[in-house]
Amino acid sequence: MKRTTPSIALATLIACAAAVSPAEAKRVQTPTALDVARQEVAEDLLLDVGVELFEDGLPTNDYAALAELEAEEGVYEDVRRAEGRFIAVHLMDTLQSTGHWGAVRILPQAAGEVDRRIGGHIVESSGYVREVEIQVHDSTG
Image: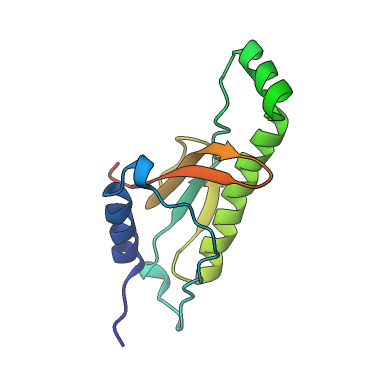
């Protein structure tokens, strides 16, 4: 049985994501099966991951635009901020449950040193559709 280390799997994921332009990005319609470690991996081989709170994707300091979004599209600033925290926590829980990663923690933006940093922002979110853009960086930037 061939085994892929988490760093190789993550590098492959990043390379594949980089090859697809945002216009060609596929919307995920069905849940993806979670790849859970079948055997315990030595702690010193696991990479630590920092998950940043996701940006809400709303205009900043433009109260007229925020009021327009709220009135026309039902987009509320407080709900979007909570959603950005929810996505980050859900991602952290999912990564921890796989057994492929070391410590997975929520980080304030641009804080702390970790092997991998994951962040992003909400592009669109409604009761039916959620589109997020995700960036993954390693410790070298």
